[in-house]
Image (cartoon, rainbow, N blue to C red; front, side):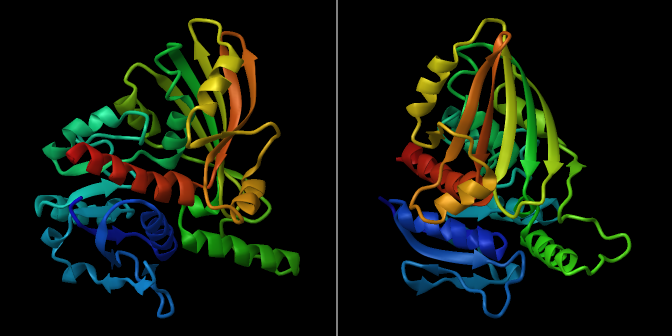
Length: 320
């Protein structure tokens, strides 16, 4: 296999997780570099194969030197995607900043890999938002087989879904309130509370993967550090058999069917002691012409880091 040079552009915590999965993969990564689109602290450094990874300022980067860029920035930083792609570097847009651009395929690994045939149009492939990825993986095997017509999804978003700074803010607010210290006037309360979040463009991203499926997304900010939970109702023109769907889930190595309810916190505690991360599915039951279920994944380690590396592996396999 051809040796690869790979750049990661993400905040520190996500860079660490991506590097971890790259190291566990069979990809022949000869050189890994970090592009600091978000400045790291002095004590923050990423290691890969027991070596420190070089950290580059954006204006120092020669994109043509890299085969791949794993990009997890925001819309304001999207010019880096364009610059890398124009230089011949294949960009995996992990957070779906470019997902709604014409000609950019939106791909969830193992669900619609055939859409990678269009990657050379722009040298960019987008993963959808983690809310969409989690939904697609849970239903990819039965959307077409059972002609699902309508999906209703409520996502409970952890603070890590936003960024590492929001995780720190939740920790600080929790400590303050437990010690009887009030929050600043006008400060958005994360600790011990919930509030609605907008779900912009998620239906459009899903329809780039499955054009005939309509979905309604709702999102609630939850006082959880890591791990996203989704309550899903899927409706069909026909009666669905939950046992058949459960059997399909059990045949997918990315999924873990749970006998008991698993929550984001419980999942985090369990996976901290395990080598693998999964999308956990539980509470599957039948409704009229449909099913409902609950799914949980660490959206940082699973939906972003692991799936990005899986997508890179798939692209490399198709090139060969």
